[in-house]
Length: 186
Image (cartoon, rainbow, N blue to C red):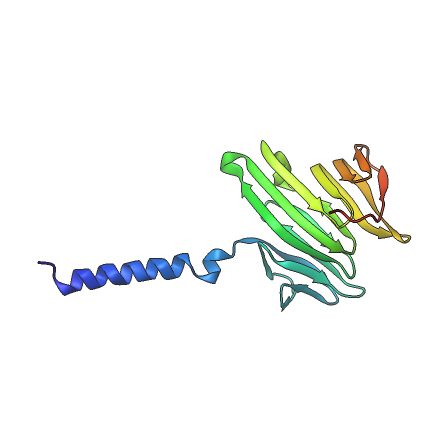
């Protein structure tokens, strides 16, 4: 016959594991942190300040005349210009398995992106989607956003493929850029 103390201890252990496993803190993976802020910016519903943790599925937003820089765990830098909105859909950095992935979704504003150690992973998949085009990133530093009433992308380093319903172009030399027609992706 089992005594009550070991049964209670097992029950409390199971409850503790369930609380830890299903707690919001366990569910939200920190993927980086805020390293620079100018004027008003938000991470989810929180006001962004240097050191604010950034987690998967967070919506990053900037206001008028604002800038926000996020440094991801691998050293990737994402800088948002004014009135920008980006959501972190996916982030994986596993140097032990040489695997890295990042998927960002931007709806408004300009951004500058510079890959960190994700670029060194053997298996990597880095994408940025916009309402107007998708960008496949390969060891890249680039700028993209609104310019003179339309959207564009400018390669600063590496290589990036920009595609939408109108076609595709690969930018492979620093200084190359492309205009992105304002036709929305379906």
